[in-house]
Length: 152
Image 1 (cartoon, one colour):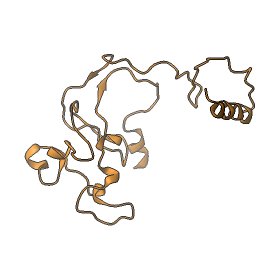
Image 2: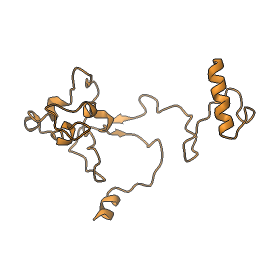
Image 3: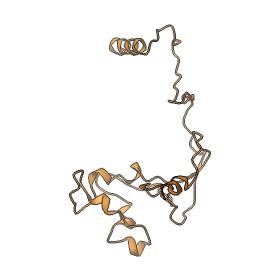
Image 4: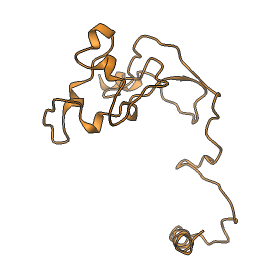
């Protein structure tokens, strides 16, 4: 630990009302906002499996980005190429039987229309996620469709 990092850590402890004696040396405990221990390692590779390709997945709330209902392993999405557009672009979605990219993805931050996908929306998996067959990392009480019923 550098001297600068140590000073920062001590200042942070002081701001939180703690002392260096409160936190054992070498402790790696990290907790969530709700107090759950999240210092355990992430899900190990192979502890999950990708759900097979399926029909589009129902959205659970207004403005939810669609979930990816197919495998995306090996898809290239880089600054030079976006594999998702092979099927989801406005010129190819019909022949691919895919959902076309929303018009909202062709607007800049000021609402102006663009001829290509906005750089803010180019990396699809920032918002759209593939589905896995695994236990949730964090429990929750969300019920599908509850938010939609309340909004009506």
